[in-house]
Image (cartoon, rainbow, N blue to C red):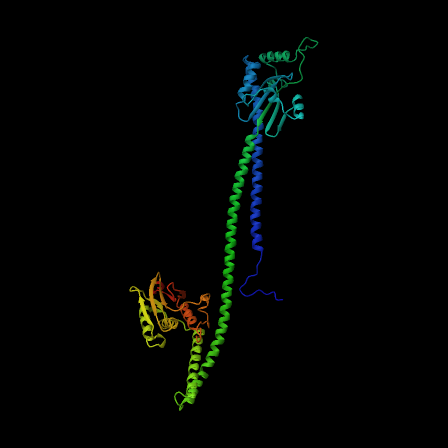
Length: 481
């Protein structure tokens, strides 16, 4: 079996598709990693901010307590009022202050109409957290939907540092607190010190963190979708553009291969036609010589007449082949297309196929000059009009019209015949294609090649009212100047 690829056809490969999928997947992975890192970083900053807020609440309570002690405005009621005011801060769920004797001095929750405030402020925590609170340890822990911050409550701690002394107002309140929270006396008659300090438990909502993370995730997903979709559209456009370019290259390769094949066939046909032309002329003369002296109407005279006619037909085929394979370069000059139409119609006035057919012309009065070769334009017109006459079959009308279309002039030859053969419209201008029994199939091919050489084109279409119309397009002289 042969593994060669046909001319003009590209071998199919999945590499572009795999490359496109890889690029899109890489973009998606990069967006995902970037989004995850950004969300983690934002979450860490917000959690740190929430922990800092909890610590600030504790420090604010201690500062407010020192202020109250200094100005003799400290007590359980004032502590409760202070707790209730602090609950107005954002994110706070509950706040509780426990004295050294593990009794709740003040507590509050942000939920309106709460029944058991103290139970809500201190309850519902894991056992290990309850143990840490009882031991007065520092607690910072994120639960399901909240952050729990627990710190020892020591308003007078700044004065208990090594080398520090309690001021009189602080010593008075310190002794009072010891007597209230540890009524036992030591051997000297002094209140027994309690090794446990007070404690503040702050519970803050993480709803804003979760909402912000969800918002970031949604916006990131939307951005990723937009970027992914845009990248996909760009990649798809590039892929389609590449496929279109590949198809165009394949088409051009096919055209080059076809033109090379036609050129080779044309050179062969031209050589054969050139070699056949001289023997045909000799054969025609020989047949005419042998027919001399024969009675008109005899069998010999009829055979000679038929032979001469067939030789003439072969001569036309040979001439057509030579015209097609060896086109003459056009001599472009400004040309009045209206005069060319009238002159061609006059030449065909005595054509036998024109008998019974009206050849009418209709040229626009403001028709501009075209840049063309007069002889080649006349040859094209004659081929088109002769085809139209044959299609009309001795009746009806052939209309030759011309009008300006932009920077070009369109010349149309319309007949009233059966129209173009269905499904074969693209083959009309191929060499040797003919729907006529004795047609050479070179007339329209030669006309199309001449039109292309003049910088124009030749097209064909069926008319709505019946018949066919062939249109020759030629550039205006002013468009080429």
